[in-house]
Every structure is written in C-alpha cells, then in structure tokens.
Length: 434
Image (cartoon, rainbow, N blue to C red; front, side, top):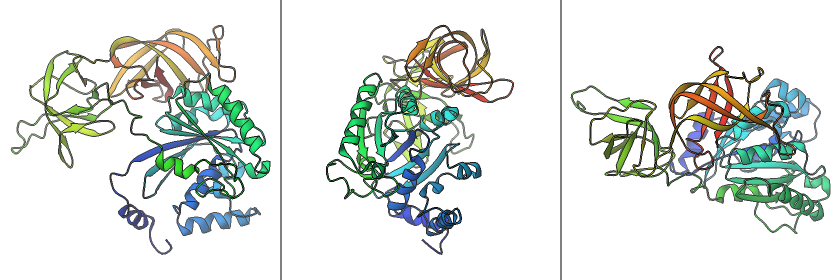
C-alpha cells in the first residue's frame, strides 16, 4: 500500500467488500503481559490489514529499542507512556476488514486500576477474547475480566491460551488450563465459550494454522471471528424504539411530515403494525418507515430509522414506541449492578446524580447500596458498602420520573445506563439493570 493515502487505501479495501457485510465488535481482556496488544498486531499483520509505512515505523521503533524482531504490540499501544512501560493504559480501537466481515477491536488494559477502561471497551462487544499465559495459567485478572465479561452479557467468549511457544506447545498445559477455566466458568452466566491455543508472537493458530500443535484440531482465531454466528445476539422479540428526535422539515414538499427518528433497540417493527406510545399509553399504527436510502417495510436492531404514525400524537425525545402486548417495565426504582469509574467514591446516602438511559436524561438519588462484590471470590460484601474507583456494587436508585427499562440480560440497550456527576459533568458509573 506504499504511495497511497490511508483514506484511498481504505476506500480501495472497502470497494472489494459488500457494504452490507456484517460488523463484529470484539474486545481483548486478560492480565498484564498476556499478549493482548501483540495478538491484535498479529491479527492485523497476518490478515494484511496494516499499511506498509505503519509496519516500517514500528519496525524502526523496535530496532531503536534493541528488540528482537518487530514488536507488533506497538500497532495498538499508541500512548507514549504505554510504549515506555510496555503496557496498555487506555482503550485502543482498531478497524479492519476481510471479505467476510468488518471488525472493530477494543484493546483494553489488563491492570486492576484500569478496570473502568475494560468495561468501557467491552460494553458493546459481540465477542470477548480472554488471554491466558500458558506458563502462568489462570490468575486474578483472568477471573476479574471473565466475570466482567459475564456481567456485561457478552454473548461469546474465546479463551486464547497464549505463549504456547514458551510452554513447548504442550497439549497437557493447554488441557489443564482449559479444565480449570471451565470449572470457574460454571459459576458465571456465560452462554458460549471457545478455547484456542495460540502464540501471538509467532502467529500460531491466529490467522494461519499452527504446524507446532498438530494435536489441536479446532479452528484458528481468525476463522472463528469470521464465522461465529452473531445474528441472534440482538433481541428480536421485545419491540423497543426510543425516540431520539422529532423530524419536521417545514417545507412545502413535506408540509405534513412528522417522523420520529431513533435507533431500534429491540424487536422487529413492520409497516402497518399496531404500536403503543410510552408514557402516554396511546396506540396507533406504523404508516411508514423511512431511512436516508429510502423507505423500508421493516426495521430491526441496530438500524437507525424514522417512523411515521397514522395518527398525530404527542411524542418527543425520551418517549418510547413499543407493542401493546409487550411492554418494558415502567419504574422509578432502579435495581442495578454498577461499575464505579470515578476517583471520588459514590455519594451516599441520598447522593444525587444524572442518569442517562436510552434517550432519556433524569435526576436520581442513591437509595441503597446493597453490597459490593469481591471479583476474585465472587463473594458479596454486605458490610462494606463504600463504593470506590473500579468497584462493582449492587445499588438501588430512585429517579425523578419513570423510565422504560428491561433486564440487562434481555436487552443490553434498554437494560443499561450511565451516571453523571452534576457538578463536574463526568461519567462516574456504568449500570446494568437487574
């Protein structure tokens, strides 16, 4: 790709890929030095998704630092402090594509103090890659990140047992870690777990099949990512459409046009369907479903559309379009698990925050902290209810007006929220409704 701009090269690449190609989001997790950044660098390099000048740059940096070979981790560790320490601090996002799929990668930190960054990067993922050093086996951070992946309801987990080259490509080492992790995962709410022995440094079973592990007959990581079924990861049963914006063009051509724009959060909406509007409770029918590219007969997650109704009813931002016989919980009392992001501890009792849920923004106060969670033992600490940075706790919040919510396990959009400090406007927590 030498001699052409990044944008030209990307356009050329996308020209060979169908614009309707499925998008898969995945995140990496694991302890420090388990090889997360190296694995992503290897994926990008072996799938020919990096530019020649990028490769030459990290090659020169590796030589300048006296490293043997090319340090592919430098592709994602972009901060100066990350490169100096050889660790990931912030979430690094990378985009690449193959003829089968488009991918967005979130390379998340391994240190305990950056748990909030890991939650941020993994919150929208279809797949979580959990890396384990074949020499060290399952450590504290492995359990921590596995639990958080379970808490975030990531549908698919791939356990990449890395650095197999340093364990002599031992099948016994692989089977031992696989058995130990499977026993731990029995305590978690995880639907789909897959195990792959790899060497990110040398590329074994990353994109190409390893010649060093003939005993492993499964698929490579790239083959898994290209073929894992994610079509059913969205909720196509419970119809939820949070209204984001009311579109009124006020032109002669569209004089009576009143459309409700937003992103489908669940279910399948079809032209002619009877719907209910919340909070009013009025019912109507879908007259039309519009998009930038033209009219549609149906809309489903995660499409962004504009809906027109047969009746002129009062509907604005924060309201929700649902089915009359399938409605979310309408409540002012929110029972949720939260991950605390802020250096300042949770204000209690009766601490006040702004709660943002779908397209609604309301004030709330902390009614109760039920317990904090020990990630390592999964023990509920009912005595210590102080919530500090990176803590995970179960809380009850009271909002100033009703919200339209589902359990997070049923819908990751209508079941999640963030808390914002009114004074600083900082996002202080992410929440998952129970």
